[in-house]
Image (tube, rainbow, N blue to C red):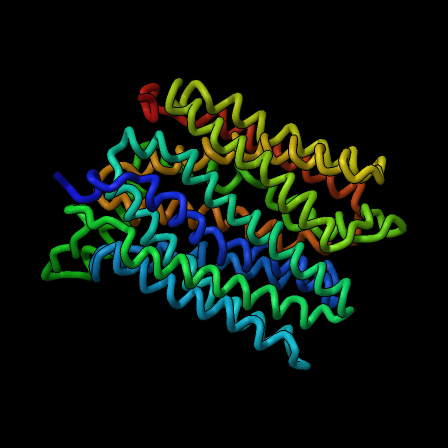
Length: 421
């Protein structure tokens, strides 16, 4: 029997996707809170950190190389070591006078390594599990990937906020936070050296006599898929509203009431958004995976599309009412995140469906690259747009930007049996 089938997926799927999430959320979420604490404006923060999406956008350009050279397991374990060192290295840049440029440089290295790790880990997941197991564990995978936000936006924010409260030194606080995060990541990377099974199908691809021809053939096969235009538009537009909202949530929670925010401390944001909110996200992800395995992706798609977008209206309410009851704010964030967990699970399963067949690792990477492009471009302007509109009108605009997602949901085609047990 294949060693991948002998070893329970529970022994490695949760930790693999937890580790996959940490560098991504460090780059995309922690930088938002960190640069806010270090005095960087919303416009500059959003513009420069949005560019960090670029490696995830262009990773399909080198995704065939992961199949052509080495195994998915080897790529995964080596890149986790690189990422652990990168996370710890951020701590050394923050006390310096030119911390913004230096820390962004390390973040770029982390982003490229993380994007490449995603290719290898996602390909490994599809090789090590049967299709039924992939559907069963997509909720677990999504949940533990999102659980990394508890570590980042919950634990790390709480740690940084406490150090700031006791020392008044945000540079020191964030240096400590990234050093701890790097240590945790490296510990899990060492665990994966021994815990990840070795599926028989995870073998180096047979070298062809024309590797460049094979390289471009991989891309050509993806763009020859039936309904490719609708597929690409769905990947680009499904998260259009969320992409803008997501970048401004932490600044909104932290900005004072006079500036239209809720005036929460870094520590409080870590509890409300990074912990309570993520519990809602985790529950949504688990529920989404179970429902898709039970009923199939086709029957779940529309309810989940509604679930991910309609709760965005909660931010319209929060920006209008500016409530100061911490428990109520946390409950609102948990509801919004629960809906996001449901909807994002269906989005992930759709990308798995599109990538089925030959070159599934590279084709899944292409899907996630278009998804990242749909996040990067709107986010680059989100900070400037928020400064022009104010939080109240910005969140209304973000909700209106979800309309294309519903249009594309109506146009895509889903195999009625895909994902069902």
